[in-house]
Image 1: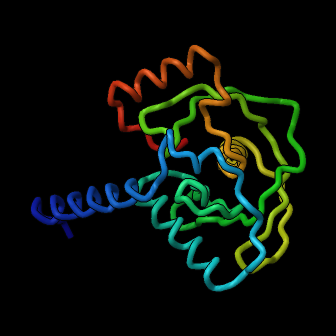
Image 2: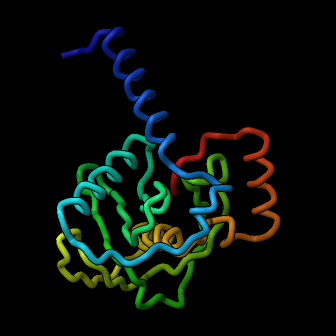
Image 3: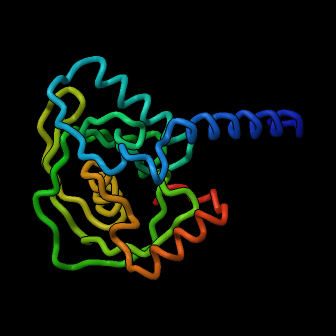
Length: 188
């Protein structure tokens, strides 16, 4: 059934309000919490599950493909990402235990660096060890875009931003764009 123009306009307005509310929760460049190292999660309880669910909601509304707890000012080693609609994944205490020697450079954006897109070199394949929100141990290999997203989010847990992983000229250009008011950017 076709939607009326009024219904479409209302839905677009609601999405814009959710986006603003989500972006208001995300810490941005200059906030010192983004430079701090997150602490390991020790309690795998309902509160952790709620925290992950909140992160998924914020990530979707922002919108982005990944989010680290530190981006919301929560100093837990927790990341979430979603490569396919309705299939979010939470990794608690993630560690990248191996990286391929093969790398690829691609432009990345970040919800915490609005308007800044920079080329970042990342390993094409990684092996990750983590837990899910219930504490179940996970170990898996990841490649291509998923590997890039995980590496990006784990960097956040270590206080590292994309601007730290790019060339000096690209960093300067991104900072100029941010300073000049480019606020659209989104995540990777």
